[in-house]
Image 1 (cartoon, rainbow, N blue to C red):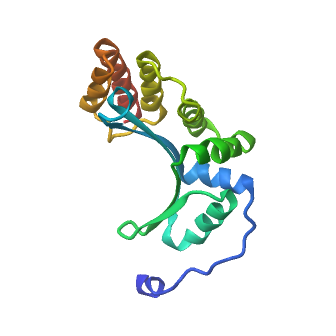
Image 2: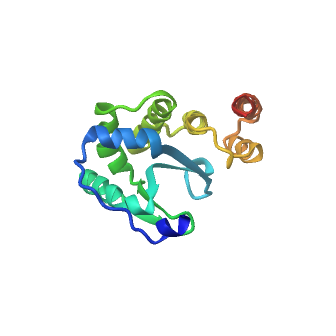
Image 3: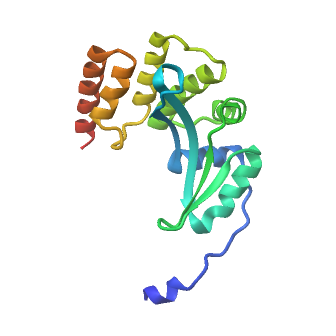
Amino acid sequence: MNQIFENEKPQIIQFKLSPDYISGLTQADGSFFCNIKIAPKHLFGIQFQPKFTITADFYSKFILESIQSYFNCGNITINTKKHTAEFGVVRLAELYNIIIPHFNNYPIFFAKYHAFKLFSKIVTALFNKEKRSIQERRELLKLALSMNITTNRNIETIDKLFTILGVDEEASEFTTQRNKEIIAKI
């Protein structure tokens, strides 16, 4: 039975893209994230890289192309191994001027809303060149680490980031709280 469907291409149906549709798709398959890299050439040795994405299966790539056209920004990348396509926006000006206003006008909900509000604070601070002192960078780091509980941020990495910013005690307190949140989700 699977052989019948393997060679079939899904039909592309006509649909009307709306701002609410984009927010709904983001609620299900989107992400607000801030990558944090140890980067000696950046302020205090840490680089913040906020990113907004929507992921879809490869055959739904046309929807992501419509979203890219709607926003007039971002890029689409293909992951052939996972058979997916991803629309992503990383430029601060586009995040600040296009993506954030969209979700302020057409909101998402629950945990995604929480991530969006933290993402907005980070993008706004970076775009406006705020939060430049070491204490303010610590605040940004806490926001970024609180945004999404992810398994790719291990305790050692978090401790190292806080150590770079000179906050060993806060790092210990933060990772203890984070561990409790991870365990609660298991």
